[in-house]
Length: 537
Ligand code: FAD
Ligand code: SIN
Image (cartoon, rainbow, N blue to C red; front, top):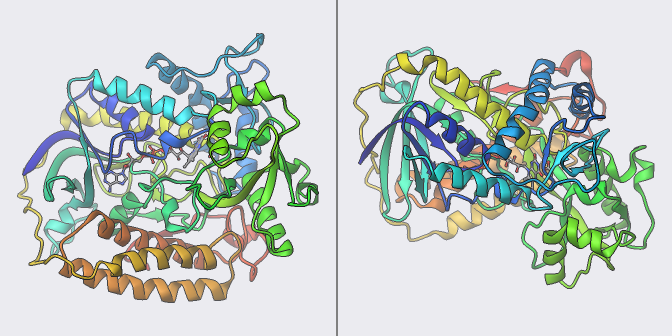
């Protein structure tokens, strides 16, 4: 089947849905999302959205905090417009029905503003500790009121369709995106989506690491698709590890928000000694890269499996009211956060790199835009400031919309013949252990060799292994009928390769990238983004 639309939006998190709501004023929108529509990183966001709302706060302070956190690689122009456009975008969310927690007895802001690592002020709008769920709820409800948004759940975007893929023998420059192939996982059919504009909003890639705060959808599909299509990919070496993921054998990827440290939570070793004073003057509220690296160092030094996050000194009513979700979740594992320190470990959390875009979300492929975690905008540089991600997604989805609105009336949907999906005589696999084995091997390999602390030797090892796995996957992909697991495996393997490649190229340590063979920051040679394409690897 071929589905023709004005806008093809891949992903239904904050970036995809906020764009879809706006674009529906211009034309028809198809939102393709690989699971249920709420299932996204957005849905699990806890801390909130950073934006200047307090009377005592200033744009300059938020800009300064973002730049300091970004280790010299943020694009200053981008930081300035994201911060200054932020309040208008969060106001829009409020108009669409998002209910942020209100302040009690505080006349300098209507809202209760959270504090997180690296911020010099309280400036994080939140809905208790379930901010993402509240945003996702409001956006889904808003999208449901609009007639010309159609959401395709359980449709998995496989590959972008570009002019150069249809005419491989012609030199097409710049290339142009025409749509995407998407696999309907319920009916086991592949459809062609043809659109005037294609917006990648497929989110991050935490699942490339063994331990992650991310849900299962975060397999870097958009980055892998864009890379295969010839898009520029940037700064993949900067993978952010969140310092505090709940450590419990049965707790799958549960984040303990940085806001807990913002409200006074203190990191301690198992024996109760504090340690962050050795690493940063802001102690437990230092920027994330510093805290995650400090915990990693302490765990390696002591041989312990976790450190503790202690907030038991705060009042019980305050804790159960401010962090109801964290309180309830920890109780399921017999941890009462009002009485017990919480065992935590660092976990892969956020990809600062991604599909390289300009300040209107345009990629180097015509009609292909990217916004949200899939993109690399220049905002985060070498390390993202807490709660700047939801903000970035909102500001950029709006900018993509404004750019497209200027061109929309003049653009036609190309009627070039697009052939339907060709399964190349593939048969049902009788050996799916290959898929599960390789999934596991990639994630372990990335965790052990391309984690918080890297070395040349470890990166070489990782590269050799991932190259072999990629060959195996390629063969498997050509011979067997596609499944979701296989499509995701193919994508995480590519994302792993891109992270390793960028990490190998950067011969210094900066922000989230720490290599013991080049332990210092080198501004003279490396104050620049890493940029790769499939032709330059
Ligand atoms: P997502 O919200 O991840 O949405 C991606 C969408 O794309 C999903 O619908 C997914 O199913 C779909 N998709 C992916 N691949 C395909 C495919 N092949 N075909 C079809 N659909 C596809 N940031 C903050 O600023 N503040 C916070 O407090 C905060 N807390 C966080 C807590 C947790 C536990 C996590 C994991 C992240 C947190 N972050 C936070 C980061 C932030 O949530 C994400 O960066 C942001 O939500 C990304 O939004 P997005 O729309 O780009 O992607
Ligand atoms: C958190 O609540 O700690 C996550 C915030 C973020 O990732 O920005």
